[in-house]
Amino acid sequence: MSLFKKALILGSSSTAQEEAVVDEEGNLFYDAQEASLHPDASPDGGILCTDTEVMDRQRSAVIDIMKSLGRKLLSGKFDLLNISLPVKIFEPRSYLQKLCDPLVFPYMMEKAAAAKEPAERLKWVVTFFIAGYHRAFLTWSKPFNPILGETWHAHLSDGTQAFMEQISHHPPISAFQIVGPGRRYYFHGHSKPTVTHKTNAITSYAVGERQVEFLDGTCIEVSFPEYNIRNIMSSSTTRADVSGKVEFVDRQNGLMANIQLGKVDGETGLLGRPDAVYGHLYRISIHPVHSRVSLQASDSWRSQSLRPRISHIKMKPSSSMNAFVLGSSNDRTESMHTGGDMHIPIATCSGNWLAYLDWDDERYWTLSEDTPDEWQTEEHVLPSDCSLRDDLNFLAQGDFALSQEAKDRMENDQRRDAKNRPVPT
Image 1 (cartoon, rainbow, N blue to C red):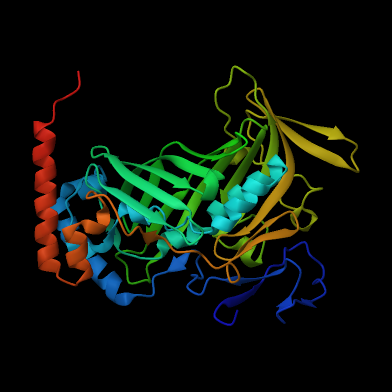
Image 2: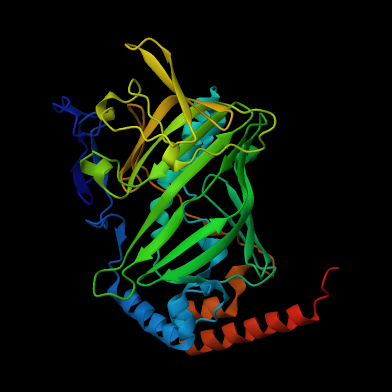
């Protein structure tokens, strides 16, 4: 714990600190009040890049790119994924590998698979993804774009397998399958990333269908946040964060979690930081005519009975939402009605993706205490595996010239193949 920044999480409505207790390891803990902030956390929110050598190399590459783009840079009408970049901006890994960086807490998925109650299962699925957000910034260099047909096969120490494949070049689309031991959980889908440059920042967002399936037939739909890298050209230290809202939907059991990423109005401590996490797990009723359910961020609704410590936060229903209250004024359950669907909050999620996550008053994840697993490339892989790419391996050896030659050669081969490939009619 000494390696982490201590932070006391106290809502502004709290009047007193809870009584401190000592756990079996001798650590002082204030019952879901104390957590440890990531060691590289920025005062402005998000994670700071402390590797100055990497950032100097990145800035140099960005300047070269800006010069080559010219007027396109001013209009903002370009996609960084479609630009040939110098190898000095890359890390010696493929995007297929980086996709798996956050997916390293398999015990959470095992808890989800073993859960007897659907709501408990959904809580663990949400926790699994939020706990991994900070690991999207383990490295600060860009991964190599996968070549069409490129694969990656890897595993975690518990036997979880990752099967990745690049199934489209333009637009770039990556397919993935994460299979737990005994197939007790199965996360699969595809990712179509977009990367945009805005003045002094880069934003990445991946579109695609993603689902987690379990042996009993439960299927949970998953959405991802936006990933931002800021201060890439200014004198300020470069930092990164995630933003937006994420949704997790279990249609079979009529459940949905809607989580907002960002500062919680009226809060102090970790909940008052831009990297705070707050949301609800809802019981939903979906009419047959509706193919999808989507609770917008502006439609957030919180039950005062669920989280007294932050009950002062004001509700912000949209004009399109009809809200009503069930039960007495002293013991009420608040619900919302939007687009013909009923949403009744049954649990509250709060925390910080750089520190911890609570469901109601129970801690589900603590950054300083939960050790992530690490992906290992399989010993025997397909010839298409990214671990065999010459440009990646030359860069890993520090040979920028040979890496650039290999990258250019692979890109030219890919362009030639694309021209020779029959166009579907």
